[in-house]
Image (cartoon, rainbow over all chains, first blue to last red; front, side, top):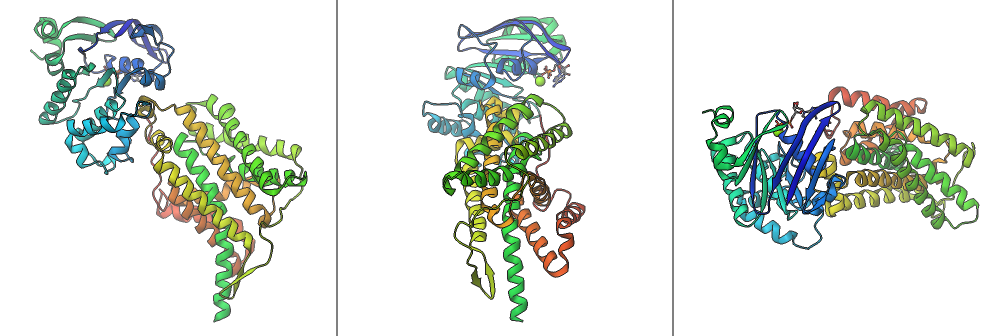
Length: 233
Length: 294
Ligand SMILES: Nc1ncnc2c1ncn2[C@@H]1O[C@H](COP(=O)(O)OP(=O)(O)O)[C@@H](O)[C@H]1O
Ligand SMILES: [Mg+2]
């Protein structure tokens, strides 16, 4: 579904991603792990088109999308829940979700809304509240829900467990597994590598802007170097 | 006693009339500031273009309603051009640089207006005649009702647009978090252009409505921009409700100040208001939006 070949990305003159290649097939959960500052968020931003691409090629469903602007990538079916949640603070929970369906023209927003409220019942409870009044975990659910409102083919999740209490992390992970069960394709970025690799079909380890290891989730979980560097074992 | 009351009412009417115009200019500031962080000092020139455009079009024999409509559309085009050729190319520039750009644009607009129009003061006939309406011993001009009523309609229309349409919500979303707005598929460039276009339209309508009362000239925008800016600051920059209240407040303070103290310092009232309010409430009466961007 998604193919990234030899991707370069930079902030000004500082190159952050060097020759990154990866692939996500339909129906997979692919985990992208790596330490803080490795370039995971930069990669996600580049995939969504909010960060310019310096070199290489991004192909989505067979078409090169390098030149497609961010808003049209959402129309193509790439939707992201960004790092740090980035909810629309002063807007209500429901408005945040409805804006997730901003580019949808299939009239399915209402049905998606109901489904997201089933996935995260607390959002239904708080639907009239301003998003900035939610707890961190609830904002994370809102960010994921908002991304789902676009009815994406590929869901990009950047650090959905960041800063959450363990019980909330479990809730988010359960939701991700549920989504996969429904056929969603997911690229999951996590610093919390063990959790991510445990539910992933395949994974990549990003080290200072380069792919250092790749393989199935189980392979990476068992890899001595990966265990040493990222799993604290 | 009745005389005192009548004088008070008279001053209040005139304060509310000019305050309504300040409120509209402040709303224009607010809309653009929210969507783009730009404080657009060309906002007052939109008022001038709306008024002057209508004056010259009616002079050319076009009926007033049509002339006003054309002038408003023309002002919107100026607003869009301002965004496209002055603001958009400077994307990412510092707030101070962007303010400088809008001040430059304002000077440029005045220069062009001097050539396209002229350097004289102009007026329009009042829409519903000049017979004052007596209320409680005071009188109000029918045109004042047009100004206040028109401002009310615009405020309600803007509120309905922002709160009850998806496109309006997209403007609010862009103001709240531009990165997230892009990630949900909002074309932020279009939203910013929309903010400039709508602000220009609001300014132009204010210009059409107020010209029969205050007269207009190619350089009148500066005064409106300063008063509208003061109103927006007093209310809390970025807060639409604050813009409206701030505008009315400054209009009223000017009128009462001129009536009870002296009209010599009328134009200083706005600045005293800014200083006083910001000294005690640095974020304005209604709390402006904190400038945070990702
Ligand atoms: N907006 C930015 N401007 C300049 N450098 C940045 C910016 N965002 C991130 N970086 C740098 O890019 C590198 C990768 O950051 P990031 O993609 O956020 O990593 P990760 O998500 O893996 O923690 C880091 O060295 C970081 O300092
Ligand atoms: Mg990151």
